[in-house]
Length: 504
Image (tube, rainbow, N blue to C red; front, top):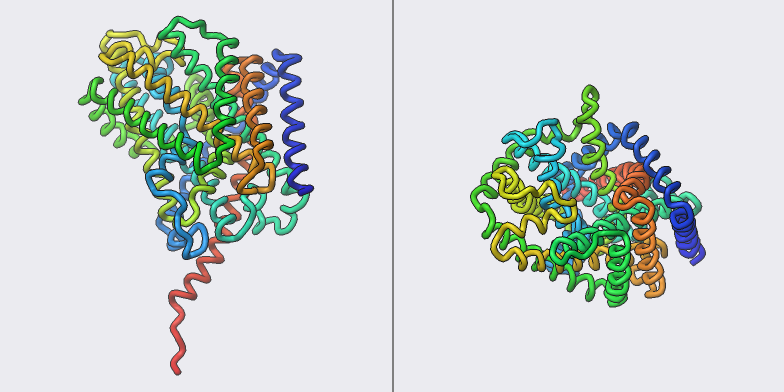
């Protein structure tokens, strides 16, 4: 219990210091985080591009490798959740608010405001906008989540290690993961998770505020967002206290139903043929240019490099910062799946659904803008989705459903976050005490509020990118640890399969 409490206390202490600095000198916090973020994006952009692509290659290798038949658990373990519920839970935790927040906003930004290739408002800009959106939300993103989740599930359910980040590194560091080294690793993972989840809560509050502003003329400012976060803090803590099998499960299924309803409504009422055509064409472009996009750093074009820093590097940092949280959560619900089944479902199904989502909402926004029907790009980022709905029948209904969906995703993300943080801070315990979950729930909300106060969404993004860098190194070590352990299992599996029985 000593190790458990020390990880918890150190993590809370570090975050408390940050909160105090953010309250006392918000401009200092904003300035420092902006400068550090700028340095990381400029100096380590190449590093992020390479490691994230290597994570994807590792996942693809595991998908086709003979070790794919290995179960995440004992050979007779059965999955705890049905496949539809399992996919709904991992999808809600993995993307959630981000899909709604950026569903129309990212494609329209790439088309009309700042193109990845430097030319806006053209037919080629339409293709580029969706292609790079697919890139940011597709295989690379889910490879980051998938590799962390797979490693955690493998070591916890098959190797009987605690569900902690440090526990996955035992093949490399041995018993040292039980001491100060392990504590440091777990604290870094907790800090990364807190900033990743806090960023998402900030986006959620801004999106809800944006909807209220567009529909009901309620002011869009910090104080409204603060009230939103406070109200939803009570809701998601209440959900978290009901446990994984109740609150999160119910909300995850509700999220998928609402998201599917919103998607079908927009697809049916919107420019259906354009959506289908742009979806099909963009998949081809995405697969064709995937290697180029994966390593694109634009060393000779300053404008394009700034775009890469603002979008691609930001996203890779966001996914890495979220990966301990999403990874532990997905690992917790994936016992009994084979490695091949796990990688296939985690990598491909959410990516394809996400592609169709962005084709529908982003394609509709671009269609309105290109035809001169509406100036979607002129709206605030958090209002653009509602601006799209306003141009179609049932727009008010879709706006209302979108608001409910964002609220539900807000609660699910925060609910899952409090559960996972409680697990991480107590050495991977499967059923952390409610008081610990409450502490993390309140602290998550306070962090989001302080970062919004010190610099709005930009401060949230900056802090998250900073937190992601040290954890990316831990992810590399975790991947090496997994491959080392699987290599040993592969040798044992080969002996079992191909050793001929002795004649008697």
